[in-house]
Length: 366
Image (tube, rainbow, N blue to C red; front, side, top):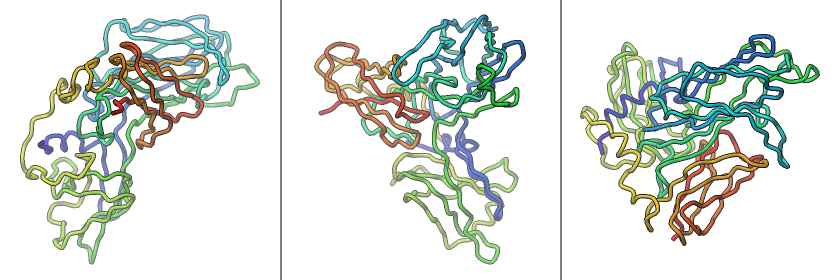
């Protein structure tokens, strides 16, 4: 597998730029959600979905906003339909406004704007379910993402909570500004600690990352043209990489990019070229089609009901399936193991004890 073209694509995303003591680090941004109170009970929700290259396909299959007292709504998009509903259970009880795609999923990046009016003319900043927005995610990770494979299904379904402005009674109003922007990042940051220097010469880098992975160190003199310097293996939780040769000749700016979720013992030459994996290959990755015994099970969706999360998996009858709910650092939060009695199997998770974002993945149990 060749990496260099992928490295250049990821370079500005899982990014750490260092210049003689000045350093920043950020993960790729998946989605931006802006909520604005317009007055007279009207709220505007603007969702911008970016082209996160860690996913060959990333669909927002639904958007739900906790919205009491709705009396009107509109959108300029022809891709969405809106319904109102209620969800009551042991964990929460609320009314909401839900949008779903009707005409297929647009190509990223794209932006959608929704307007909703409430009989309440005061508002607050909602930060968690049910006082927030929730997006349902359907993701197909490319093979060089931090989430790895490990026999899991190639698609990942999950959801993320989006803090936003929501209507409320006057006694709940919290004097929030009329506009709030939330940035959603699905994958964890690389923690860049410092450049390792001696007498003004740069000899290495110190960074924090929680997994055994392969990175590439890149350098630039102008922040536009980048040179691949060396491959680095991470050793959790902190990696200190050094060389005997000063790196100053490569430039004054340095960054690292993730290129593999494990140790690559035979990476391509640093100056080689590569062809990007096609969407079809990234989605299928050689897996046996769903429903075939021995093939990877496919998570087909999730939904909320009575304070629970229902996760659906396409299966073959008789298969034993393990479904995991993990956080962005791949730590398993809840696990359900079920035996399929049909072509669709549903597992139930406790929403109150799940993080945001949360990912649901499935694999066969031998």
